[in-house]
Length: 238
Picture 1 (spheres, rainbow, N blue to C red):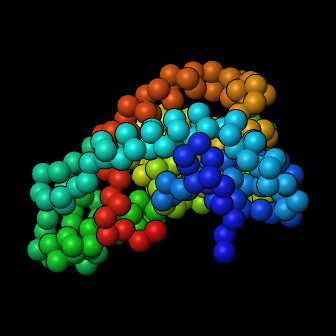
Picture 2: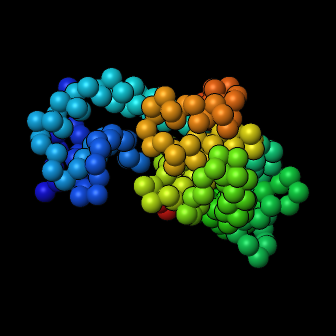
Picture 3: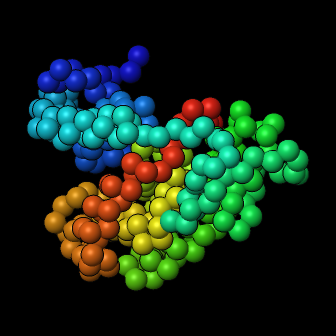
């Protein structure tokens, strides 16, 4: 049975690790609140620390719910627009072609018999097309930040743009590739800064200031742009 905490009307799942030395709080793909704790952390200490994070927890859940309410789900019909690195591509349904989905100049061509599984095909296309691109983009940014991630992975991260592991692996959401390059660069810089400073302490923002001086403007823009991209959750393999 998993360990949970009930604090301030919210339920938090506790995940303990013998390798962890600090406390952390995240919201997972499904919207569950997760407290990450050292193996030996006392329950009363966890409850007290979690109570101090209630404002952050409520704000994070509210922001996620607001974004979910604004999410547009595509119908996958001729005339819809999908973006790749900020460039708009018109969707056209076609009767025959070898691949279920392909790109032709500024069009996406979707085979009609693949429409029911179109969300999966779009995800696969973005991952296949953008996987090597994001690796090159991370390498370029890493040369400026002085960090070298052990690996770069493009995958589904729910409503998160990116994340990084304690082992030095950086993860990016495939949906990020719908945004302009300058906004992708902000997420890349953010995650690379976390490799040097895991928390959002003042040192983290100093690192980001040094590597991407206009990061604040880019972050504000990405929050607006998030309402205009497709998240394609229905029928998509996680």
